[in-house]
Length: 114
Length: 113
Image (tube, rainbow over the protein chains, first blue to last red):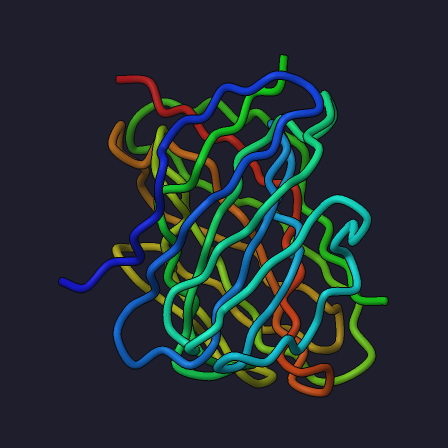
């Protein structure tokens, strides 16, 4: 069964360092999402891509976060510089389209900022 | 904006007990509604969905009915098992807003033998 791949699974970094997360969606899925999940809360959408275009990045802290999906396939989320409050699980999901389509989630990257 | 409110947890039940997890939503359009489940150390996976009013989603003994009049999508299961222990998330996808998804804060279910 096809899966959404994410790496790394865990990342520990120091405050003010740069970190990057990678996501490879299920083949053929046009829509890709990056979520941040703080412990005890639901996922919060950071950015949504339709192919290589950003559809929604209204909740992305653009002074420190960036996301790209250059060829409309895999995607990278970067944080520079990392802050203590960025410690969370970062989830990637993909779907065939938007709205009624099921989102398939990766296992996530757990980030700890020290 | 859109929002999803779930009953607060954690919920602890004995095996074979009846489960209800309440979920209500606020949306400007006509959203699709979902229940996702997250097991420890894993990402979320779809449990069931409903795309229009009065639809009933069902899977693995779980059911939820899309109630537009009460803006609710409560999750139910008649007889829970230890293996159902997980975190359950109610979510909506707003088709009038590029399919933007909004999740509730999750309800942790623990089933004891």
